Amino acid sequence: MANLAAVMPALGAIELQEVPLPDALPGQAVVRIEAVGICGSDTAYYRVGYIGDWKVDGPIILGHEASGTVIATGEGVTNVAAGDRVAIEPGTPCRNCEECLAGRYHLCPDFIFLATPPYDGALVQNLAIDARNLFAIPDSMSFEAAALCEPLSVGLWACRRAGLLPGDRVRVTGAGPVGILAAQVARAEGAADVVVSDISDFRLGVAEELGFRTEKAGDVPEGPGHEDADVLLECSGAPDALAQGLWRLRNGGRAAMVGLPKQDVTLALSRLNVKEISISLVNRYAHTWPTAIAFVSSGRIDVESLVTHRFDLDDTESALTLAADVPDSLKAVVYPNGIPTR
Image (cartoon, rainbow, N blue to C red; front, side, top):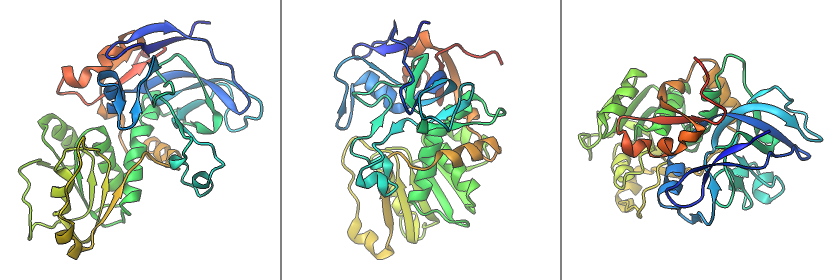
């Protein structure tokens, strides 16, 4: 049985290669990968070879937003069985360290995360992974939607880190996939008002189609008298977005920083101090998949409308360059075992 993968053998190159078919070791399951969303981190590894301290040093398989069908299970696996349709949480912690035992498994110092060097990712036809990372999805939920539970989890975690409460007024800066999903989470969790800002008219149009009020970034008033939000979800990574967004927060406002700018950020803390604003950073997520699946399967959150392009495995390179080649694009999904007939 062949097992093809989209391998990045060198910076800016993708080759279709046959890799060994994995066995289901004790505690693991082998999953036939049906859908993989392309993330900005995949594009960064492909283009420049690093994100922060994580550097590509040798061939790697990208992709961490994934779903599929269980085809085999190893000894001791009880939560899934062959034939189950599953969403895949891409990070595997040690489960025994201080962070894991405290429930902060996403901060495990020995965290193994798909497509984060030196670990291979999910752009492969069949993948072995800890079965505890697998979550069964209902028959009504597509593999595409299941794969996008990963970026949805980032949005969920951002809202949790910001301490979002029903009735909050929320500003979301950045209308990329995570920003739009974070906005949907805020609405689903009872926000009284959600405003999304971005520089892209196309992305703002997507947000408007999903029912959000929008503002063009740069046209937003700042300073005293314009505090109109309780929560800021900064999802753009633009250098000034966090600093500008904080001025829009009311006293006691909370901010979660999802987007990571490439340079250090300067904040006027001495002036913001009087408003007693809380700022939280967001590093992936924890304990989010059941909620993400429930939100999507119930129809409260729409993930599939974010998908603008779909690719076969042998066209992975086009998926990775989509954002640069097609400005009016949002989310690419690769189908390692073929694009399904709709």
